[in-house]
Length: 414
Image (tube, rainbow, N blue to C red):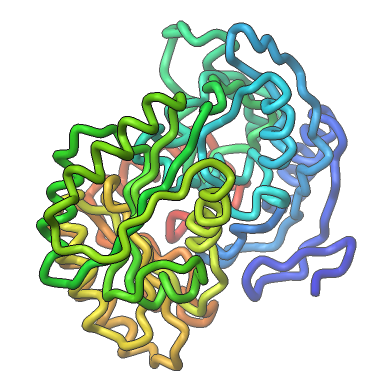
C-alpha cells in the first residue's frame, strides 16, 4: 500500500506525493520540478493508473483531488465549468439537481476524477448512443511545462475560434500538461430507461447483430457478452453462449414504442429468454455493464474495429482460451477481453499477435490496458503502429519540450 505521502506507479517509486489546493500551487510545483530536472506525474482517484508503461525517470506525483470547485453552472445553457479534481460521481450528483447529466459511463465513479477520465478517454455502453468525452468538452485549461495555465475552447457551445486543442488532451494520458479545468456541454436526464436482453447460439450471432444495426429503433447501448461474463454478472441472464443487451433512454412514450418495436422485430428469431427491464429494474444491469470493463483481471485487452466485424472477432478470441471473458460494445465496435488464467508470456504474445492482426484487418487496433508489470516492456501495449507515431512525438516535443509530464508512460523513448 502507498504511503500517505508517497505513490507508486506500476513497480516504479515510491514517488513523493504533493496535494495542491489551487492552480497557482500547481504552477509552483511544475516550475520547481522543471528547475530540478524532476518529472511530473499527475494522479487523481488512481482507478486507471495501470494504463500505460512504467515511468521513465524519477519525479513527483501531483494529486489533483484538491481541485474540486464548481466555477460556473448556467443550467439553462446546459453547460458546466468545474475543476478537474472533482469526482465523476460528485459531478453527476450536482447535475442531477437540475435534471441533467454527462452521459458518459465511468467505472468507479466515486473515485475517478474528471481529469483522469479525460486523460484516458473513458467510455462505456452508452457510447453507442451518446458518443465519447470528445463530444462534450467545449473548453479546457491546462498547466503547461512553464507552470502557466493556458486555455483552449470556451464556456459556450458555439465556439469555433482557433485550433481544437481540447481534443488533443483527451486521451493523451497526461503527457501534454496537467488538466486543471473543464467546461462540458450536458444532456437532460432521460425520463425513462429500459434494457432488453436475450440469448442466442453462436450460429445466430452474425445475423442478430446485423439485424440490430438495421433496427427501426434507436438504441443507446448495444452490448454483447459471452457466457462467462453473463454468468459473472449474476443478473439472471440467459444461459446461452452469447447474451445481447439493447438499451433505450428517452421519454416514456418513445422508450415504450421502441421496446415494443424491437420485440416485434425479434419475434421470429432464434433467441432465448427475451426480456425487458424498465426503470429502476434496469439499474443494476446498467451498473454492472459499466463496472465490468474495469474489473481487475490479470490481463485485459481492448480492441476497436468496424462494428460488422465484432461477431467474428469475438468468436476467434473465445477459441483462444477457455477462460476468455468477452464484453463488447458491439454497436461501437469496441471489444474488451479479460484473462485470469496462468498464461505464459509467449502464449499471451502469440494470442495478442493473432487478435491484433484480426483487428487491423477490420480497420482497427488492439490495446492492452492491463497486464503484469513485468510484461509491459515485452508486449505491444499500444497495438499495431499506425504510422503516425512521428506526428505524436512532434506534438509532445512542441507542447512539452522538457519531457516533463508522464515521461515514458505513453510514447516509448520519451
